[in-house]
Length: 79
Length: 222
Image (cartoon, rainbow over all chains, first blue to last red):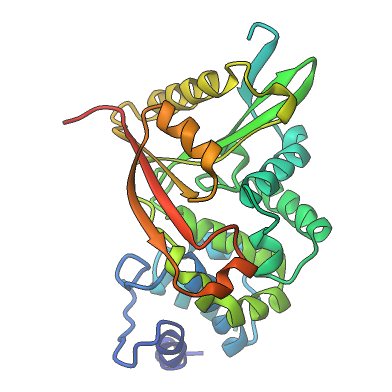
């Protein structure tokens, strides 16, 4: 799956989890940039992303995700 | 105090550390968020906490490396968890913990959490990077009043300063109804610097209390 398609599918997920229809995701985006991206919403995000792409992240995958770019790369590797 | 040995926790301590986590999380209540927010029994939760510790991730409250243990006659009688926030690979401890829970608890539990997350969000407190976060501190009842709390606090701070000599601050998040723990912290130089209260009465069904305090101790000023 192309990176652009992953971003297109991730965008509504992020907007839903963080309740922000104007949120634009970039590869550099991380928890530090989004006000209500906390430990609670992070679990919800992971679950929604796994549901969206029908994948299951390994723990080492999750801990490598410093930003959305890392997330996109890991999703891509699983598809 | 001579009969007590304070040391770094090892893998064999993990089942005891799970008990420390459960006792500390409950505080002065019978509410354990790992059970109430994820729809698990306490027995299941203990097994999952053990699994999370066994992953040996560093830098959060479910890291084996964050804990020290006190031994008495060869058995652990206290456990304390503390880590320097964002020290390891610049990852927030909340994210590391969330990753552990997401991975270990399973889809159904996270789906259940989705229905409850709005109840608890008001008492979530961000952790300040490069501060020492004290999260779990539990001494078995029969070993209270022996000066262990002072010895443990000193060791926690010493260990942290050895790892990061520029450390300036220790923080602790604690429910307001944990009055005995709050008194201990005040006695050890902590001050209350913030309060986070939920107006949603439903929170009492899920968490020990509806208000969390942020307490802080300054180790050195600039």
